[in-house]
Amino acid sequence: MKEILVVEKILKANDAVAESNRLEFARRGVLVINLMGTPGSGKTSLLERTCVSLRDRTIGVSVIEGDIATTNDAQRLSDKGVQVVQINTDRFGNACHLDASMVCSACCSLNLEDREILFIENVGNLVCPAGFDLGESFRVVVLSVTEGEDKPLKYPVIFRSAHAVILNKTDLLPHLDVSVEQIKMNVLSVQPRCLVFPVSARTGDGFQRWVDWLVGSGKSLG
Ligand SMILES: Nc1nc2c(ncn2[C@@H]2O[C@H](COP(=O)(O)OP(=O)(O)O)[C@@H](O)[C@H]2O)c(=O)[nH]1
Ligand SMILES: [Mg+2]
Image: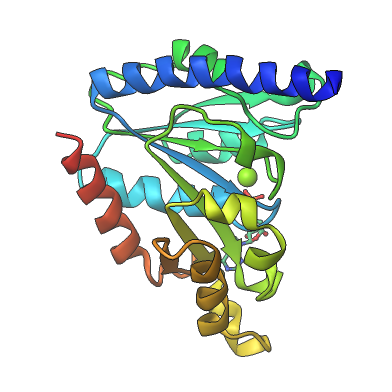
């Protein structure tokens, strides 16, 4: 019983910081995307291509990279000229997710002036990130077609909280025995309002619709 109380307290404390993050992001007019998914689903690859597409449309973007260890992903984005800050959660007991305080601290190292979109790549995991509000505008889950059709049914909590699912690696479909329609149906069965964007971060296929949605969502913030 005590353990449950502790968990509840942690989540309540996180929610308070998340709300203050949300107010600050709204004050600055920054659209914030909490990008979640398994390790290897293609979150960083998606960000690399998305950030370049947004820059071509003169949209200012920043990225917070969450990983247990290494600065590899931050380096990949920095190499593309993206303003990025890395959070390594091995400094916080190997946390398997980001929390709102980590995001708040990371924002101190970012210049968010003239930035319209902030992406937060969460630690690769389909379970823990779901419970932690970061103050984001939208939650997006990256699922690759190689992960199989049943993942939305097996990990319903994270998909239930998602505004959109990126179905990545569609370039591999000719080599797989997997149905995009079945994955979409499984996503919609746990979250009927979820948007689904089939894309290939490798070829750029499907990116137009995804980037249009980001730009439109940013504009609707006013
Ligand atoms: N074929 C293919 N491979 C991809 C695609 N997106 C990512 N990958 C590969 O998947 C692996 C993991 O990608 P990464 O972006 O590091 O995933 P993350 O761990 O979710 O950030 C890398 O080898 C990428 O090159 C894609 O659309 N198609
Ligand atoms: Mg990554």
